[in-house]
Image 1 (cartoon, rainbow, N blue to C red):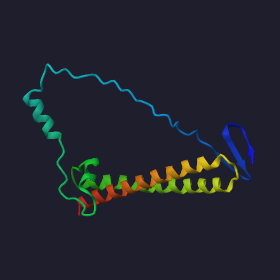
Image 2 (cartoon, rainbow, N blue to C red):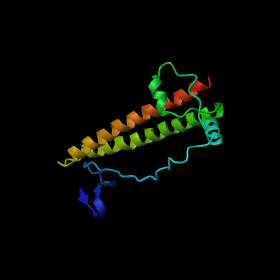
Image 3 (cartoon, rainbow, N blue to C red):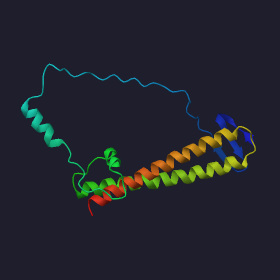
Image 4 (cartoon, rainbow, N blue to C red):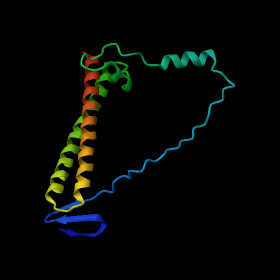
Length: 151
């Protein structure tokens, strides 16, 4: 196994690029948002306009999904919106499936190497695989929730 520049490792005819992993040190994100003035309460006309834009609640819920699951989803405005959101979640499932295939190939390549540092990297890859499987499950359930609303 020959090591080339920029972290590229060449194994026979296959080149593998190591991506830098994220630091395990927790970071704190600070966001500064302008505060609204509390001196001017909204007028009656502003309150009526804002009530028109609020979404309704879920009327039909899939029997195999928990009610709290719907809290993370936006309510579709009509059947076309539900079909669009369903398709978006199905596209996410297909994308994650491709990512899982690539990840599985990377795991297989790392298993074949006899380097001592690959054990920690394999653990990171398996953790990433678990996160992707959970994301795939979420998007599949979300697509089913939207599908059920227009049935």
